Every structure is written in C-alpha cells, then in structure tokens.
Length: 367
Image (tube, rainbow, N blue to C red; front, side):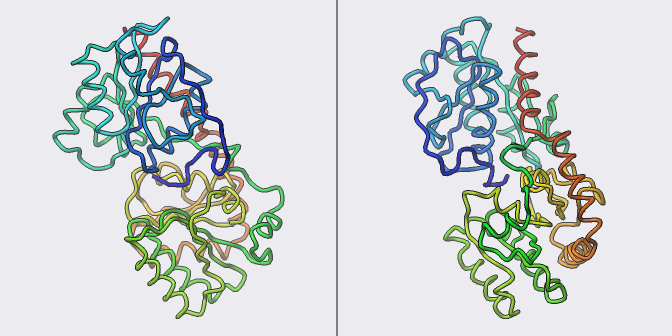
C-alpha cells in the first residue's frame, strides 16, 4: 500500500487525553512502529470513525492527536463497556489477530474479532488458523477476497477528497512547486524500488519524452539505504539520455497532494501491490491514471474512461499507453473529469468508514 496515505503531515498536534475506556467500543491495534500502509489506513480512518462510535488505537507509531489507549488501560479490556455487549478488536496484521485471540479466549475479555485482509496471495497455514478465529473478515478488494477461505465482506479503501482535490489553477499549482508552468507533468509517486516499478517508469520516460518536448516527469518517494544503488542507476540512465532537466527525482515529500495537483497524467508501474492508493489519490485530484494490473488497480480504474490498465512489467505496453494519453489532449480532459467523478461517487474515505461501521453493528446485533 502507498506510503503517502498520511494524516496531519507536517502539523504539530497536541496529544489527545486517554480515552474513557467505558465508552470505547472499538480497538484498532497497531503493533508496527514503522510507517506502513496499514498504519496509514488507521491514521486516516480513526478521526472519521471516532465521529461514528467510540474508537481508539493501541500501539506505537501513531500521531499523538489520535484517540489512543495507554498500555496501562489494557487490563480494562477485560471489563464490559457501557451500552454494548462487547468491544470490537479490529486487527490488520497477524500479531494483532493473535493478541485479540489471546485476550478473548485466554483472558476471557468481552471482545469480537475483526480482521481486514489486503493480501493477494495464498495465506500460510498459521495465518489461516488466525483468520478462522475471527468473528468477521473484511477484504479490501475482490482479488483479496478470492484468497480468503472464510465468509468475508469486501470494503475497498477510500480517499480523503478534501486533502486530495484538484487545483483552482493548474499553472499556479505547478509554479508554486518551482516547476515550469509551460510544461505538462506526468508523475510516479511511492517508494523508489524495483517492486514499485520505478525503473519501468524511468525507462518509459526515456522513450517517450524526447518526441514530446511539452512534457516532463516527476518522481517522488523515499529511497531507503538498501535501494540507494537502484536509484543511482536510474539517475545515471536519465543523465545518459540527456533528460536530467525533464525527469526529476524529488525525494520524499510530506506535502504530496500539492504534487498531484501539478500533474496531467499519473503512472502506477508496480510489479506487485497489496491494494495501492496512489491511483485513487491521483484521480481525486482529477488526474487520469495508467496502471499495471496489480493490487486493486483494475477495480479502481475504468479503462478508457479514467485511465488505462496494462500488464505488469511490460515496458512496451507502458510506453505505448503513456504516449497515447500524452498525445490526446481531449481524451485527457474527459478522463480528468471522469476520474474526479468516480472517486467522489465510489471511493470517498467517509464511505469506507461507514461500511466498516456496518460490520461492527452487525456483530453487536448478533451478540
């Protein structure tokens, strides 16, 4: 999942007080300190969910302004909350499922266990055992649902349409980033590494940009130490092609919505992905998307309407598709409007939060 899905980036926030456990009906555990797609999901959803029901996160690596249980409050989970027959423990990783199982079956905590799966591969025997102990299972896409051997509900991720929104003035949005407003920009955002297909994007740009002087490319995302050589090789390719002034490596950016607003086309070139939020973030900013057929991309993009789906790891297909969109200004304009409309009608973050609440409510009704 995409690392850009964050809330309150760059903003100082006061720590929230410890929530009243008696009126906390849902626990969202997060046992991974380093930022990940799962962590980002919790960061995005909790503020919305807290308006709908009493909810709190538990664990490290989360902003202080989120409602969070303190570790000293954990024994209180053994007591029934006020007004509900039990709490919901909503896990998104194996260790969190295991913790819920121990709390429920060993310590007899009044809990029901929910698991969200984004995986698109066959689960290990251990994971299948954990999943069988869940009271409800959510899949983030129909592809993910096919790998689950239990009854599940498909609830696709949504995007914050207030945070990701089109610019009032595209040229000014470009200028504000220190870029050339006379150029159109195609972007590729996410961690710089082989799995994310950054090399495919760079090689595509090396093919298509020389014949399209009105276009340039920007790449944003973190490069970890283990992938520094990979990025250096990409930069060398760009230098050799004489395109260093038109294929820009901008590094990790906290204000990523501003960079989407500078784009006219987005490319998601991943070789593998669990779900993949970047196409939704781009489309919410009225930017059409060319994406590989991995993750949930084929369930997010309407081919020929809001963008195009191509085979993964296929440089020829990517180059042909990107060039076709660059060369058809009318199609770009139509797809821009269609992309924005699609996200607002089907993929709002509020819709995701509401559908998750329906799963909780069903469990509470069943008792």
